[in-house]
Image (cartoon, rainbow, N blue to C red; front, side, top):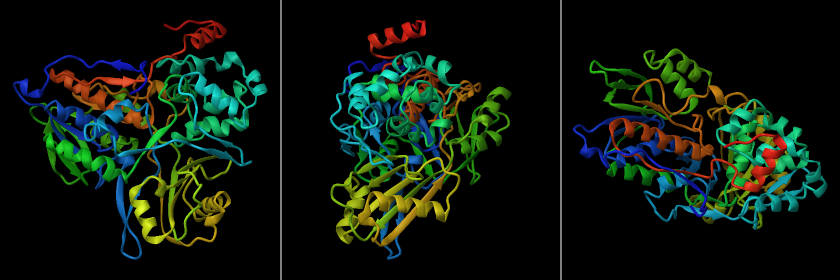
Length: 511
């Protein structure tokens, strides 16, 4: 919250607490990931009775954490892989400030090195934080970006990067894919691997399958639209310990009923016209409002099992949602350490199938404790946008590890866990117009999640948190209770000079 030009989107007015109402409203929040937890927090704080349903045995959704048992019987922490908590994630960080105002559950990583197949290396260390100097400094010191490359860039085609405006940018660029967009602006191919593919990988997809509007918006969020910088924080402990168990206790202190291992199968209406939420166990809860905050496949299953919800057009939009290609996370507990100069996180380009390597003991307490006891290292390999898990893919990932960190080639794998998942939202060209938003045709039913549309410059975990807060605000408004302010980076390009330049070369003006 250091950027003085961040934007406050004020909440609606109303009673300060549900205790001022004649009857205390009840809401079922379905999904205990970031979106559902954000919504539950916003509702419970205003005195709404919250019933939170989560299919898994742990909270956090795709940022959840759990315990694995090693062959020797010891317990090892596990999650679905590295997540960067950027300083621009105002709403997510504000939710977490409920349990720790100082956010001491995080530790900063001051660099995010990237290396390509030819050994060229980019770094975000020491960049100026003021746009557009940050982007210029990154480009000019990059080994893949030369001055003549800057001269060759098509200024007219590249203008949308300098003048992002949400949601207008989606109407302008969403029908194009990111790869074609970068080709059309003559962005150097080598630099694409290191400078822009990092954004598409964040969406677990390749540039040819990612909306160009998402790419431009990400560039705005992290470079030209914010002075928070590209440094980020990581959780200092496994996600369940650092983030979600403390937030679970906070919610329980506010009266929330939290049910893990409780998958919801349907949402209907009871005889009194209230919502009736049915779990797989057969348990039912009557409520005045529902937040559907699941990943796409679960959302589609629930809607398919709830034939009375919404109208045909809305139900078709839910059915048309897709998921990104599968991704793989491979965590290895090794019997010898990686070299001391290895970064905590290394992104890669042009080294398929590997997309990044993490060295967990550099930042996570549980991994560091394991290393202290065993003298090895805990490394994690990611492969995004794959076809399927296979022994050949795992072998290829390990080979890339040995290539980049040769000291691991002779290490013995003490324990390993490989996860392959296919539940991240698809953000493909042309998806934006039909993507359902937070509000639905069903009064009292709202959606939340990183695959749900919200016309603000947010993405990834921050989109999940922001839609969760927006969903809670929509219900609080319906109940007559005051909502919660939402914060974002500026909704349009912050540099008047760049906006003016873009408008001139494109021959248009946006207000």
